[in-house]
Image (tube, rainbow, N blue to C red; front, top):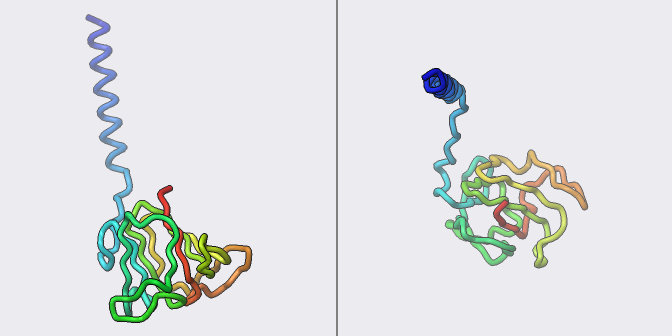
Length: 143
């Protein structure tokens, strides 16, 4: 009888602690509505304006931008100024299109967005302080 009462008290305490912790949990952030769910969107201009190209979430591997166009026309090669990643995939943008992609790169984590690439710096082998309009290739993969 004492064991049963102790077990009930313990379970009640655990439930109360769980409820208290749930109240302090951060709210999940919603994906940007300017890009469809489970997609990666690249834009010609800063702040998600100009033409847009949408990659579905299942696009995995390397992709040469010279083969892709904005919905307003024109290649996305060397012209991306902002992007939204509404997927569970990590995207690495590269300056050179050689497959596999190479050169200075910028990593965009899942469910992350960059409104202005001119404010970003690429990673080695060569640092480029203004990452606007320089990317020619993407490597898209699940973490």
